[in-house]
Length: 410
Image (cartoon, rainbow, N blue to C red; front, side, top):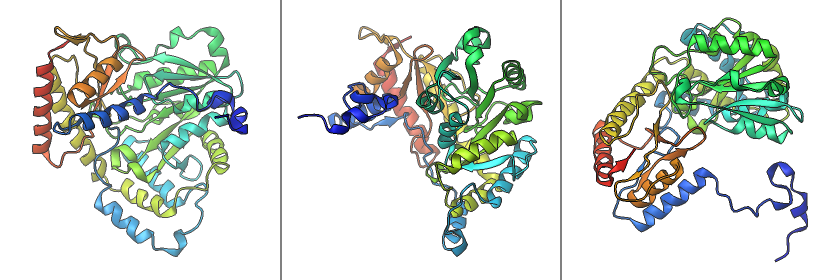
């Protein structure tokens, strides 16, 4: 069968003339396929899914009630463009209450249709061909993907245990620094679970000022902080001079599918984001913004969400340690980042996290997410579906039984 005439028209950024012909499979697609195969091959065996990266509960009923009322209001029917004051003002109150950060809701806050879209749009504000974005790995790749779309380059900063899962700025070559425009960081970090310190953020500010770099801090998991109090980058002196922080209601408010978050910080940077956004979307549905504002004003919601995932993580860490894993309670997020096993006693050996992950899912119906960017690791998520604590305990017991039967080697 011959290629369609437009086969030669695809942009190089997505593969050019070879688009659609590649055989490489995205990591999460491999996991989905392995899950389907495990379910088909072993219908008698429950799939234990630690690979899901989204909250297992609906948004709180109080938020859904606000949404139900707002959806029927005539004044909410139109385009939201760059957002409504109700949401921006709620953001400002939340940032002040949670982090002690003062923001002008009119100039230093704008909503986004989820933090993913904000991370995708920010490179459009800065990146020309040949420019560089510094990105920590492992991590969320969207800002890097769009940097490349604009002809820029990504320089990866590995997050290593020996550096306490912080990037080592001293190892960035001078020729890279001269071309760098953006630094993208993410704390609490997904997937390592590391939380930032004021000292680290102060170092980031100093680094950005020295090298004329804009900082984008992805704060999607901030309210899920278990080690100390939640910390905003913007609470550190000088941070607002060099960057913005991107927040989301997905993780801490159980509003995954609502697609609502915000960008806040330096007013000129927020304006640049707003101008790009204005040419990409017409704003999130006003009813969603108003319901999100109600969520932000309810101090009990993030506290409940945090308590649930902290409880689940403690159970998971204790169970995995009994099975031989080297792991500690993460400082934040609902992910646990653990060194991958090296093989099975008297059985196959694993040369990567992906090999171990594939073995666990195909042979034992235990789903994890592999990360091999900075060593061989597995990510366990505690967003599995469990109706109550008894169900959580039963899932831990079943997982422990299977893992001990495998006899993993580390």
